[in-house]
Length: 224
Image (cartoon, rainbow, N blue to C red; front, top):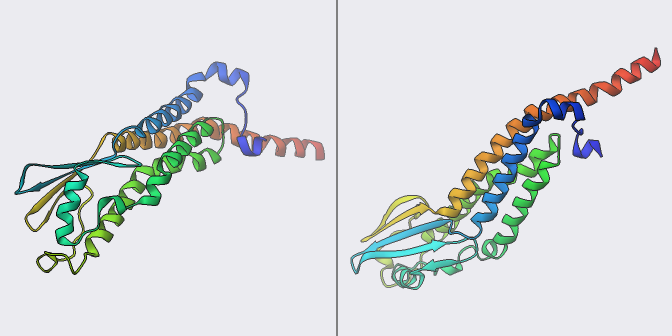
């Protein structure tokens, strides 16, 4: 089991350096809580400014659904030949809650691993925010680059790639895309995971090395 879970902390070592071993545990636990909390908040938001909508149109993207002025934005997109927003990332949205929950549970599992395998469990959570933005970018690019040529305003709008963060312009429309609460929580969780892995290595690598050396010393003594 030690090959999988890593060495256990000796009682005297725990008494002398308790904070050294508690720190990566607390960081991983906090990261798991933040990641789980992000499930219930929007990850991304976009405001579309159009002449006929002086207050703008707003859409928020949760992990599994879109809210806000989705119908109105789809109506405007129809004129330039862009597909409805709900058609994007259907598979991802159907699996997102379960997958994010699994990532949070893997972080909890990493707490009990005292060797390099902890990184294997924790790193997916660290990569998750970037993966969300990359997936969103690919879908936005796919929609913007594959406009319906038969749309009423297709001749006046060239294929484009809407930015997932920042400001973009398409004809007379302007979009402003920003990260929302969920993505910020996931990003903070990712930073906590990276910090936890650094402290985890500092805490447990000496124990792993000691475990590797001990059998070798025992074998040499036996041969002597």
